[in-house]
Length: 217
Length: 99
Ligand SMILES: [Zn+2]
Image (tube, rainbow over all chains, first blue to last red; front, side):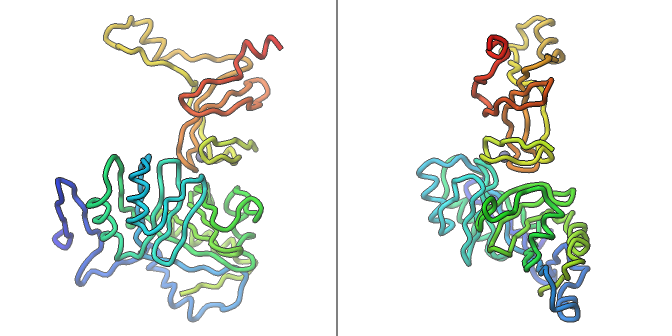
């Protein structure tokens, strides 16, 4: 593990989990060669699939005080979504409400270590920030039949009146689990576990067959 | 299928997302070294099995992963009330009987 940078700061450890040098990071769907499928595969269909791979995902656990809330807002650039099942999405950072004292923070892969380091420097009080990038991946699914595909996979009510844009739920998904966020009327983000990624990719291929599946690079 | 209200997510979800975690409001003896074997045995092993109103701990396992209480009728499966850990139930067995 000689490639790992460890910085000690006031007794706290932050580890850069990104490989350096000759080591190339591989997403859990690396073996599927989605880039080739995107080129050679169907270009028309009711469900579009894109793996938003190698992102930086951080779990924040905290029962924030007013002071912590303002510090976290200055660190993230956005305020924590405090209402249950709500989220914030900007170009730089996405924040998902996970439970009353837990949020999922998504940034670019190379930004996770930097953000962790700034949290350790600036945030006071009782909290935990854990880098879960290596254990997760993100599927973006969209298209005119995306809701039909999701309905086969999860019991959550996806009608726009119950599941508006911006809503986020953690739920059961195809006998596995996923954190589902609606990014647009016909676009959803699925945060899934790395070890279930291949199985869920196979599931989504099957569930999308009747609508036509388009892989996006 | 059951719809269960999670007091943390503040909405109804499918039963599939939840797990039952046993009887609620079981107080651990404050000083285990000082209590009798009977008290410790009651705490460890003995659970109520009522016909009718029962208070149970449930966990939103696939959702927010928080525990909360459910007051349920064991005869009809009807959920009478959902309340957070630390709160007191408003629906209790005696209140039902006196109605
Ligand atoms: Zn919940």
